[in-house]
Length: 150
Image (cartoon, rainbow, N blue to C red; front, side, top):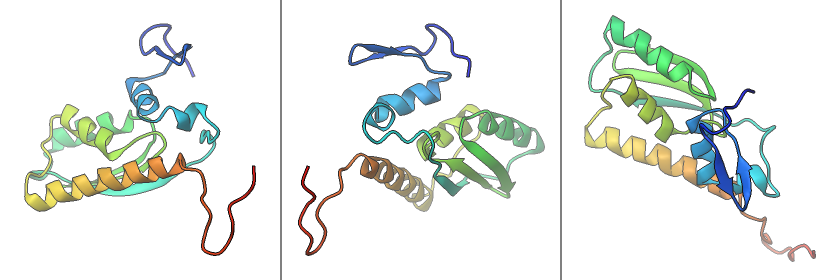
């Protein structure tokens, strides 16, 4: 993968890291240990399927812009639309619901503003953050087994 020398560079614990996009840099900033610690996840894939509700259905001109904007995001595998819904499949290790929402805003569409829409988006972000954070946790003793000795 080609990366620019300084465009998305970041210094972390005295080491300079270069990234191919702001999306990858943001993922690294959120959870650097997933990429540099004991639990490096580069070879894994965690596909997520989500539906994002919009204020209204997409026009034909918006449809092309939305598809283009979302498909250029790393980790997005599939984009479909139906009525006021945008349905995506993406790899959680490369892309998050928060980033998809930003991509939709960049495409010029407005996300649903009802309480159910806001709750659903908040729940998606919350569960994804928990799943990624759980990957960083060390396994603990379970039930009646004693913890492993180091």
